[in-house]
Image (cartoon, rainbow, N blue to C red; front, side, top):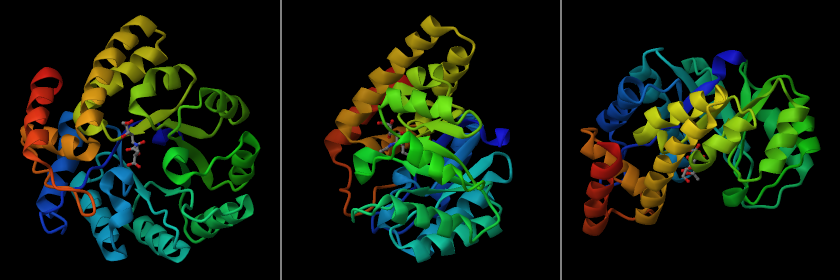
Length: 292
Ligand code: HMN
């Protein structure tokens, strides 16, 4: 599974003002990530794609557009998780047939599922396809925390090859790294990429790489080479950028920054709000300072 290491952008999706998918915009975002941000891959259908607000058909359409626009130049991961596990299976089959290199699924959320239910969810999804699966763990949004032992139980299924670890728990990250040296671990918080890389993650999946992919790779490579001070300088600039983005609204600002780079990134989808004039103005300042 070493082919899946590296820097993956969590793909933003361009929506029209009425909430429909802006296909041309999605293609441009894919190409911008490949041609300008030089990412190794894309994570399609994640939180960043505003995925949990979409219909099954829309999710499929985004998988198709991303696959087509990427032209086999990079690795593709399809996030198919949903609390409708039958939808997840359908999406896993669809993405596998399209040729996605791996699938991923968020831990089922909203209801307080037991660990056995979560395990059954993952096995149901991955056993329905000839593919590999990456667990998507993001406790601050899902409320689902799993222990080192529970990750181990999921990894008993050989098709479950790793985890996207979107958490600030570096103790747990270190324990996972030691316990499962042959599984893939992706850092999920871009602002903590340096410490995660020092602890030995195999890659990173992040929303801000859509606009900051070059610096993200520098942090990752420098840290792997042990050049910690140089990596830290770039993490500092990166985090000035990320703090500014988060204060101005994450997805809306990322889209405005893409627009300023000439990419038709469109709007966010309801119930997310349309971008205000003040946000657009602030995005220009952020662009001039950190992205241009
Ligand atoms: C996804 O599911 O689309 C992303 O992989 C999620 C990714 O981990 C991002 N998390 C969220 O947006 C909740 C991060 O890149 C995050 O946006 C960034 O670190 C800023 O906090």
